[in-house]
Amino acid sequence: MVPQQKQNEEIQQLKKELMPALMVELRREVLFVGPLPPPEILKEYNECVPSGAERVMAMAEKQASHRQGLETQALKQEHARAMCGLIFAGTISLVVIAGALFLALRGQSRVAAAMVGINFAALTGVFVYGSQIRKKERIEKTALMSGSSVRYQQNKN
Image (cartoon, rainbow, N blue to C red; front, side, top):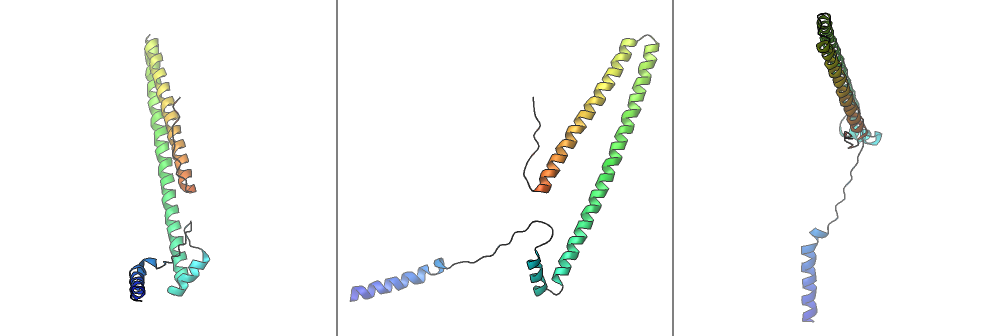
């Protein structure tokens, strides 16, 4: 019986040592997408803090209003920058064309044609580059809004 008693003591000792490692942890995780939690969680806010759900709603409304204001301001600035670019490009083109016309009337038709050609090529290059940049921004913004990690990759043919 002594070996049986020793074995029981060893089992009891192992239980004491292993019991903390055998404890089960119960955890609840809730994941939601968007500015507001689901209604069930809003009810829980009310249970924890008086008017908690109302405060969360007010915070979300304030944040949405702030974000919309920033987006409106960014769009206005982008429009103003685009208009400035058009005005500068138009002015430079008119000066180049006037200079080319002056040179053509003075008998320098090749130089005049080169000036107009370079001006046209520069305007076309800027237009194509700007179109690619806007396309890249739209793709990245769409990916960001959809939660996707898609990145824009330029095709190199």
